[in-house]
Image 1 (cartoon, rainbow, N blue to C red):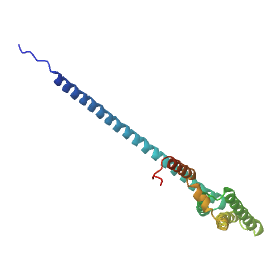
Image 2 (image 1 turned 120 degrees about the vertical axis):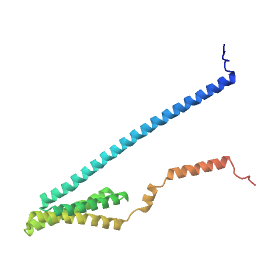
Image 3 (image 1 turned 60 degrees about the horizontal axis):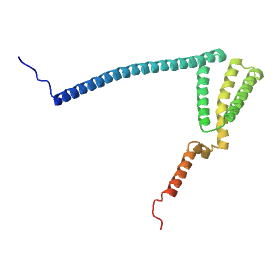
Image 4 (image 1 turned 90 degrees about the vertical axis):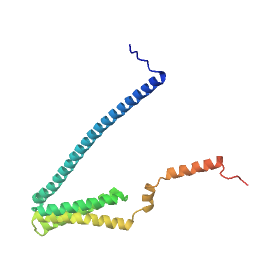
Length: 198
C-alpha cells in the first residue's frame, strides 16, 4: 500500500500563501477588466454627449443665422441686410461683453444702446417720413446706424472715464488670504523665534 504522507506545516503555509496570491491576482484581474469596461462605457457616454452638444450648438447657429437672414429679407427686403446687421450685432455684443468683463457698468452700456436705438429710429423716421424713402430701406439704414453708434458711444465713454485698473486688479487678488497668511507668520514668529536673541 502506498500511503501519502500529509504535507508538513511549511508546505501548508506555502500552499496557503500561493492560493492567496492566486486569489488576489484573480481579484485584481477582475477589477482591471471591470474598470476597462467602465472606462469604455464612460468614453461612449462622453462621446455621445459631446455629439449631442455639438448638434444643439449647430441647431442654435442655424436658427440664429437663418433667423437673421429671414428677418433681413422680411423687414428690410434683402438677405444681405440680414447678414450685415447680424454681423454688426455680433461684433457689438462681443465688444460689450469685453467691456463688461473690464467692469464697465451694465447701466452705462445699456444707456449707450438706448442712445444708439434713438439715433437709429430718428434717422429711419427722417428718411422714410421726411425724405420719402422706401420704408424698408430707411429701417435698414436706421438699424445699421444704431449698430454703429452703439459701440462708438461705448468706446468713447470708456475712453473718457477709463478703466479702473486698481479695482480690476483687486478683484483678482486674494487679499484676505494674503493678510491671514501674514498674521499667521507673525503669530508663529512670536511663539517660535527663528534666531536666538542677543
